[in-house]
Image (cartoon, rainbow, N blue to C red):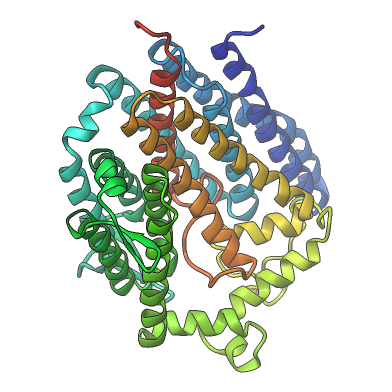
Length: 450
């Protein structure tokens, strides 16, 4: 039977093969649309370039694997390969849409792997307890990051919502850092107060209500989620934060009444914002009536959502074929599917690879979340259990928010699809998230006494 690190090493090979096969398909398709000598040039370079890209990707993954092998010998052998698989698929899809953005995505991935290695080495030396000791500082950083897009001069408004900040030539979404910081704080807080929340609650109308001293922070988090929603006008970010908090609350206490109370509070807050904030109200109307002519033709209306639904329906079971999705009009240059590299990349995937390809992508995410939850089950202390649970649910909630928006389960938001969609800050912080899970899994799987 192979050792865990050898299994991890072998599991990285499919990611490199995916990069090679994906770029080969793109270059062949480009050659088919070319004429004359350019066709021969494209086809002659296809195999060499594809192998080069695949080798470069495999080399980066091998470097990260060596860090894991020597620093975390007992870590889960499948977490990093699953993240690498999603990242490789994302680079291929973004390159198919826009080669310039794909090169930028690759650069962000390199930075993400550097921070991935730095996180592992730092926590291996300092211990995971350092996150508990500085939980209030980490929480403050997370809150500041969440509201930074509204700061004048650096904040940026996109389609009515405030998600990005600009620092010179660099643009990123601070909510990606905030999601990890807030989960760390909540895991630490609930570890210290879980027993009081369970034993000191009172029964009111058949529902256990926790004491106000411990219930207060829950109201603060709820208020922060609603405040973030009001400031950034982004329902998806608030839903992602608050959903992870309710999951942690349930895991920490085992009381179903606590997250139910939280869901009622969130529903009331979301209803108030949806009826009193014009941008959120418009998003809800677009979600309810995506094919309404007035909304479809309005500037910033339901056109994006309607086109995404058309693209997914056109894909059918097996898709139209890789690199065959029509994103812009060939002669007039009109945009058929807006922002395909980010918000709408799931619609492009479903159109080209069909329901089968989309299901394969979602299954990969499910495996990643399942390995994170298994780490939580194996963890030997409450903080590690809650942190692994929170990080896993953050990934699950992020996938649900964006896929649910594109498929019209919930209103469409600007949250990125982890590892796959174009977004530098998302790629970087998701690799840091995987690093945290690996550190936790190494502690959980380490033989006793070591």
